[in-house]
Length: 537
Image 1 (cartoon, rainbow, N blue to C red):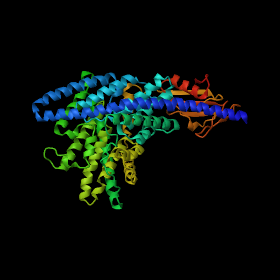
Image 2: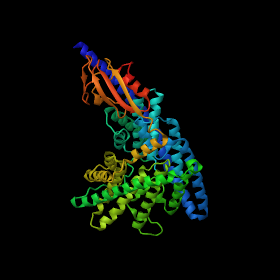
Image 3: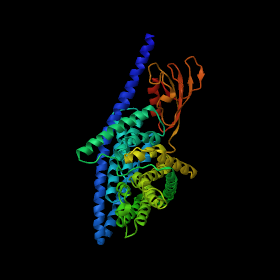
Image 4: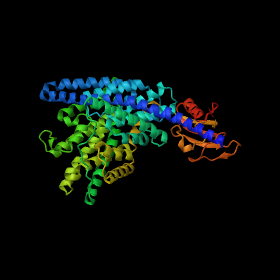
């Protein structure tokens, strides 16, 4: 009995060291630095949007400056395109790349990626693009997590946890949505759940949001929800049909965006002048033209979404409010498609929500004329945002919670739940892949990473007192896509393992996965099992 107690105590102390020092404390470090960097980045992007609007207003008042503006945009496009060519990790929003990195698909240079994405995406905002800050915030947070893991010499699985934790912290800071940020790590970054993923993400997010609040309060800035002017009123029975139709239309628009971006990407792929940097001129100049048409086509979309609660002020060329709103949505849809297809280093997360919100606002005005209570309008806009996001990203839980955290109102969730279910079904019927997954596969294919992974099989003996000793297989964080294929008892008796199988000292296990580097997997399995002789077979 005494020996059994000692073994349990030893395992508890080992678990405390592994999950206390290596995960909790490291996640706090990641959260602090991610909170500082991403908070200041988002403050800078806010200033950049104000500067670009003032500049474009000046050009509208003095049309003679239009050629100079377009030349400046073209020059900026070539410069940023050249940077993307040398640092491909910043291509696009950066979300697919950071997801691939946290799953161990490929290595990356964290400080080069961090600095390059900060500079390139901020330049896009200052140049007046309809660029969001959330995608770059997620990538920069992931870079901070990788940096913390490497500087503190943690193994590759802990580093991957910190990439996901940092990305979640970046998401939470950018949106001020801690719950959604934590869910993002499991549903989108890792696409799996484990206690380690949850703890690392939650701790990092909580720390980063606290840092954000401290910095913004000290500067006299708001720390409230992103869209606090929304008032969510759940519909009665007669209103659910309107909400279902809005979710359907928004989801179909997201499917159209998916295929439009894919088709346009093939066209941009044929543009190879100036080392491929020349193709960036097209979306940049297009952004300039749209920005001269209306300021609502500029920026990430926070101001646009907030203005949808009273869209009467959105007048373009003297057109009606509905016609002006339809034009703005069309312009933002075209810009978002060109950015994603070309790989402009800027976020399309909020621009994507802005298109969904604009569609919802258009439908809401029509539905009110058809008999819907106007009080349901704000909630219908929020559901349309969520449906557009869910149909493209295929992350329904994130889309569901995002509705309430972005508005700061936790009300009847049934309309939002119905919206994400409809969006998920539409995406499934239309056979679209998750948008960021599709971009990740394209990135790996273009960079030659896709063929580098190969089957890795490691055999190890479970040693007494090791992290795996006494642990269930489904409670251990294994390398991505891996599986314990066999377990042999100490007496040589084979056993068929399942998720509930508890590993014991003296057993021999065989683990299989696909990885680009044998050494990382071999070293990690050796650390888990306590077997220094663990080796690939």
